[in-house]
Length: 402
Image (cartoon, rainbow, N blue to C red; front, top):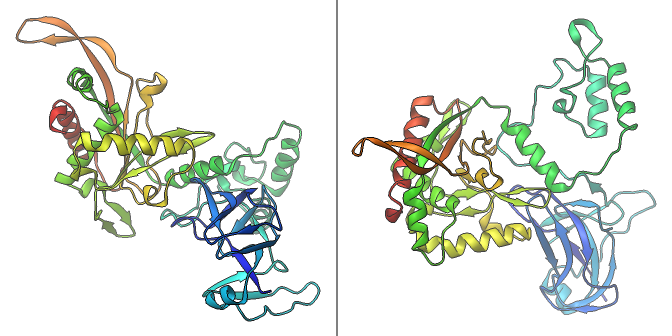
């Protein structure tokens, strides 16, 4: 009976590998086409790898807890000659000598056999910002090679004092630093934490700035009481930002080289706290759908994000993010835009404060919250960022029009 390889699929636009979490089907069981057989975890979500055809699980060549590249062979199915021929896999794979690496072409995708199988470390690739980070001011080729060997970045050495000329970090300083780490309690960072750290390091290669406005939330809170189901405060902000960017999308442009890339659609993400990190589901064409029509989709994406089961069409490709740091009781923060974005809109916790009423000639209590806009200062100046934020605040003052 022909052996059909089970291939690690492309699980997202910027996903280069995934970690095997669980083998859902024992060896020897019969499976149907598209039946889930392996659970894997990427930096964005937990997903399943499906069977390419019906057959019997012959063997797995992967181990739970290890990461494997897209296109890697995860195991084999024993299938009928008809199914093998239908998939174009009726030719026997080439034999490999001891210690020799071989590869085979499966449905136009070049993959490694189990002879050449290599696990990979969880990373994040495909983002538009270069991964260079200015940590140590100078690193010798020897030190760079040692860091690559250990999977470290220059940013990891930001707090390491150097004993060399002009404060340079020497290889001796580095080795002492590594040896000293072993004296501390160490724990393995999750793939999500590695992904978040990598994204923030990439983002920090740009000059970032933040502007803010105190916004009266009384109209928003009053409108929310009349809604069923009730929109979350972040959804109000998301819709207001989408409408403001629909009027002028230039502030959401990205600087690539000497050109500004303007967005082709108003796709806005929102931050959701998940286990050991943050995920950013995306609402596509947010300016074209009314607030009341977005509530169900928003709630669905929040639930899926917390389960780490976001669909591929709800991640990546957004032009801005909304984050409600007020849920943690914070009144002020400076969020960092994602590497592929220029903007992030933040909302603080609303508090009752005195506000001068000119008509009544007295102070009256109002619910007020700080709304911040963090941005890539290469693309936006303070004036343009301030005008965009003022327009968002104006839209939030009329929530019935969102």
